[in-house]
Length: 229
Image 1 (cartoon, rainbow, N blue to C red):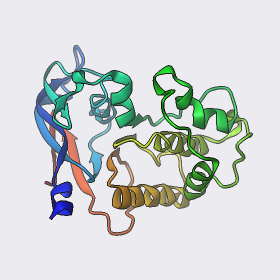
Image 2: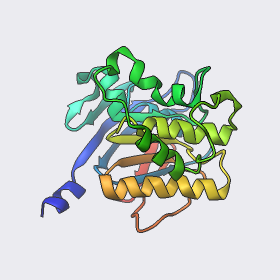
Image 3: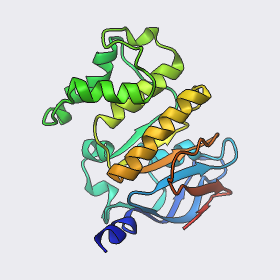
Image 4: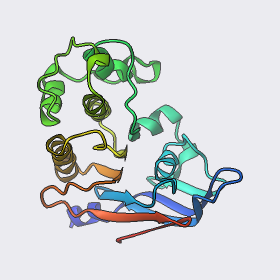
């Protein structure tokens, strides 16, 4: 019974949210949506409709014009931004890395003042994640800027996962990957979703289904967000 309750617990809730940019078509109009804890959502919609911007609302990189967004029952504004952005972790489509080694980039978030209390991940954990996303040929002392875009995309995913987020917000996480690497990434996300109840909300252009994950589909179009319950 406890497991059943966990499956149906709402972790994020949008209520009558309006959002858009001046002189442009609204991205959201009176949008309401419940995101369930431990579910795996695939967000789709026409090009330019605002799917990436929609993700940025969840950790306050963008702010709605009106309406409410709650995380675990509390308004987003009730959380300190660093804590909110660790819990609802957004990984953008274009990889963001610093001038340094692979290890420097993976451990970068742990050097931030707001994260100094966090325990750094073990080398074993890091290498296991790198292996799972097919980065086993990348050495920790390799310079990050020598990696391909696809490798950097996976590196940024691993960096995010090392922070143990509650919700993973992904913007086209497989856009620069070949099919084999894309399937490896989706397999890892499916495993974390299944075993650790990680909630995933991913903008998806191509869908590489993995295992027995019950993907939920969301469609953003004409200011509305609709999908499977």
